[in-house]
Length: 334
Image 1 (cartoon, rainbow, N blue to C red):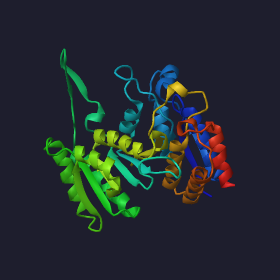
Image 2 (cartoon, rainbow, N blue to C red):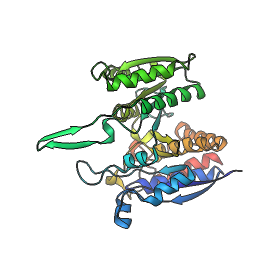
Image 3 (cartoon, one colour):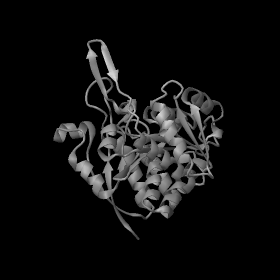
Image 4 (cartoon, rainbow, N blue to C red):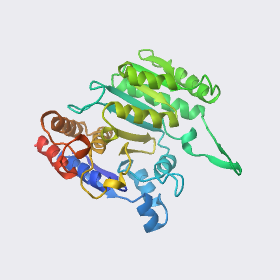
């Protein structure tokens, strides 16, 4: 059996609780992993004077893979997003967010199964802002041919590798003719190399309406950074909320797997947080490192808990603790 060393970032708020639960489940699958724990965010700021320590970056560069809990980003003040900093430092250009409904979880679209591909390094989300004069702020939307081409390439490669038949680009090229126009041009250039996969595009406002009305028409959707941030949360709402939505940030220097949701400081330390999203992220991580049998084992057990038990955390109407939920998944594996 292969041995793996993986960087572990417990995170803030509920992060340490849901990460601990997920580590228990992954280890119960029998995979051989050594966890290299690292700090980031406010905890790192207090301890080493920076929110993104060099030790953390070097650990991920060395190990190539990390499992990460949510990190708090102050709104309107304080330090800049550690998540954004991590993606920039390691050039984790592809944000991959599967949107798949879970058994027996009430939601609008119980059959939904699509994947959001978000370019992760540029556009308005990169936070390039400055004050022109007092009372006037300018934000820079940077779109490059390189970044647009490689996220399109990643989306089509993913579709081919996972049996998906259609990739849709979402954009606002009718208004932002140069920036979003470049993104769309790159998308269709890449599409020519994948004749067996249908390629189409939708203007982002119409696309959001279509996602709410008929999401089953989409298989893989790809877009620039800010649109992807918004649309991936919209899609999570279609299957029951952010507590069920996994994510991965992937680049040539490594891959960081994390839940989509935030650190939920209001319930931190109570042991009631739902670990499902980070568990599914862990399943994605296992597949990424070639441990497909372990990934299938965990996924089957997790789905079984939802299918034939009433074990639910409070956010899904149950009374189970974070630890109880993890124990139930482990029992299903035995």
